[in-house]
Structure formats: C-alpha cells, structure tokens
Image (cartoon, rainbow, N blue to C red; front, side, top):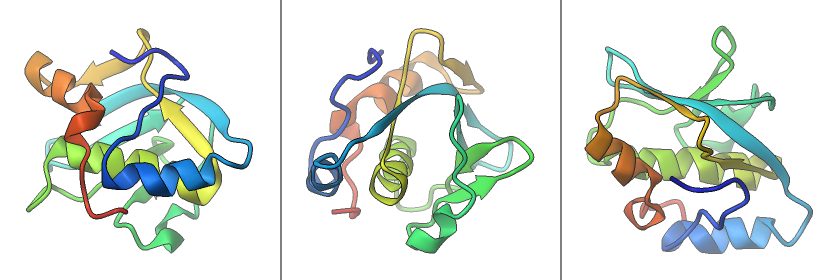
Length: 128
C-alpha cells in the first residue's frame, strides 16, 4: 500500500502529472476502490468532487450518486492502467493528488489485483 503523499506516478503518466505538480496540488485520500459487476473500476475520493472530469476526454467519468470517478470496462487496458489514468486525470485536470491509504477500502478486488493496482509500475498507459 502507498502512504498518503507518496509519489504515485511513473512511466508515461509521470511527465503529465509532474508538470501539473509544479503548481500547488491538493491531496485527497482514496476512500474506496471497487470493481462493479459490469466490470467498471470506481475510485471514490474522500472529499473532492470531479463532476466535469469528462471534459478531459480521457474516458474517465464521474458518478454523482456514489461520488466516484470511474473507468469503462477494461478492453485493451488493465485495471492498474485505468487506475493510473483516473489518478492522472484528477491530477492534471483538477490539481488533486489522490492517494491510497491504509484506510482505503477494496471492494470486489482480490488481494493480488489490489497489489497490482497499488503498484505505480503497473499504471503505464497512453496518458503521457
């Protein structure tokens, strides 16, 4: 697990996020990470609202009912790649660094996949 405030980005995502971190970033804990029955990945921040995230055109959406960011069902990308995309979208579009904490709840995600999602080396994707 990552501690709050840990450096979360590596690979292609890192350059976009590091550029956005030159300005002041807002830290927010991730309350829960969930894979729904339909296969979509949901990431619930503790306090921030991302209602206009769709404007980034990164295939990341906001569910106002659960106050969660979500990805489409993975096709070519893995869940860890989508997790990285969600975090990158929050950082680049809102200046919010979402962080896993020991209190983060994992819903419908097996231990091995939790470890992969929490590993920044697994987040590589075309969000560079």
